[in-house]
Each structure stands twice: as C-alpha cells, then as structure tokens.
Length: 238
Image (cartoon, rainbow, N blue to C red; front, side):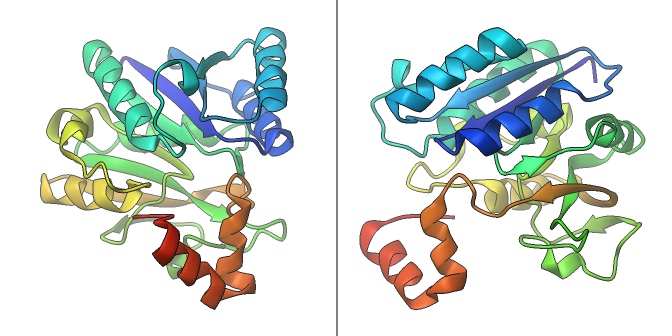
C-alpha cells in the first residue's frame, strides 16, 4: 500500500475521543498517512472543542453538518468519501473508533500484517478491557490470544484496516443506506469477493464499548429496553 487514511468518526464523548486521537497521533508509523476526525453532529460546545484540538494536535477535522442534513449516524457517508479518496491514491483505510485507544505499535503492526497477506481484505485488532481480557465485540476470540486468525466471523471496525484490494472489490455505494453500521456487511462482502479477514490477537487495543453511543449501554444493563428502543426508534441497524 502506498499510504493510509486513518479516520475516527465521533459524536460527542469528547474526552475519550481526544484520548483516542492522542494515541493515534503518537503511533510509530513508517507509511505515509493522514488522520481525519469526522464530527458527526456533536453538540456546538463539543464541536468547538474538536476544532481547538485539531489546531493544537494537527489532525484534520471534517464537520459532517457542513456536508449533509442527514441525522447522525452518518457512517455510510464517511465510508463512501474515504473509499473514493483511497481508490484515487491506492491507499488503505484504517478506522479507529472513538472508544478505542491504540498502542504505539498497533497501526504499524496492522500494516505489516496486511502487507504480508496478499489475500487480506480486513485486518483487525482484537479489543480488550482495562485488565487485558478480550471483550465485546470479540468475545468469540477468547482462547486465541497471541494468534493471528483467518476468521469468517465479522470484524468490527473498532480498529481495522481495510486494504486497497477490498476498496477495489467492494463498492460502498451499493451498501444498504437504511442501516446505521456496516462492519458486518463489509466483512461478509470481503469474504464474498474472495478475500480473507484476519483478526490480530497479537495487537490488542483498549476498548470501552459504546463510549460514543451511551444509550447502547442498555444492551447490558436493561436488554429489554434496549431492544424495545432499537425496534421502535429504528436505532442501531446493522
């Protein structure tokens, strides 16, 4: 790959987001790269905080409110914009979500794993909690610590590299616009296109699940209310 586009979509949750950004900016990467935060209709106060942090830290900030009136989440728009840019530059797309903290060697490690596998579509880091235990959404990977697994289970976009070859084979303009999230769909499309998805339990990242979408904590605290809201309000379509 010639370069990498690193992105973090965010809606509010600014404290954790800035921790994510600091870790990304401190990454030890020897591949040309850029880093963009996509502000998905955060509050006015938090938008100002992001603008100030952008000036201080040096990341690019895109306010989606300047591009669309579609309510958050706008993950599809972000993915479509980035795919087009990556195709033009033969670049990989590396997504680090705003409730994730990477280690200094994480992103370089994902690049290395992708470059060593010509058949790679997605190369993802396993997620762990503060105690180092594999956590949601990779509970299925417990027992695989220290391995790089060729998986047919979906790869979350918590911290995932989408290769240039995946960008060429999978058309994001054909994704279902009624959905909110696309990691499951794109994982499946990657496999259907003949590529392989790899989960790196050798490159764990700290994950505080749903930090950017606090209402989703109901999945664990009150699952009946969570699924009722999901059904009646149309939230969280995967």
